[in-house]
Length: 174
Image (cartoon, rainbow, N blue to C red; front, side):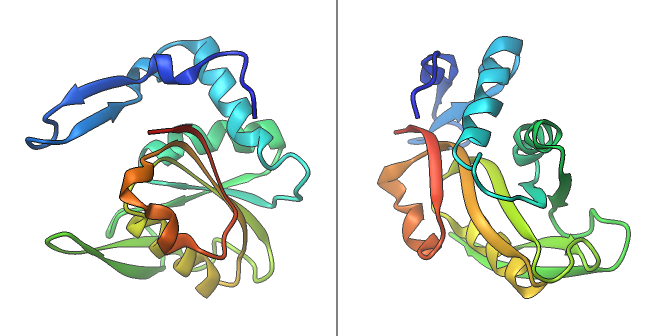
């Protein structure tokens, strides 16, 4: 997909954050420009324009920022996937491994009716663990994951390998 803007020019690199040796891709510089944000939402949505999507699913927290406007543009609902203990009603949880320990993602039990089509949106594909857990959770509740859209993909971390079997799209690749 060819965007009229080179969105990578709006990403700030922050060296040694959150720890030495990491080059953090900061999207706040992209988010603060309304025209650039609008183009980002259009580009992410554009990957799946021909698909019938019932819900956009966004992963806490930057997936909320990018996913909600896609839902508005498509005229469909938005479903948040959150960290444990953040959703007020009954939830289902999916655990995943981190470099040092475990974490989990949660969704409301009644968020999706079995068979509904979802598009999952997040800001960055790194190792793929959070997105893999999110897709597993969505499939457990009966959703059909049509695809996954990212603003940024860190290809050297090979996160796609955990997401095989899913259509994956990203705007910027590092």
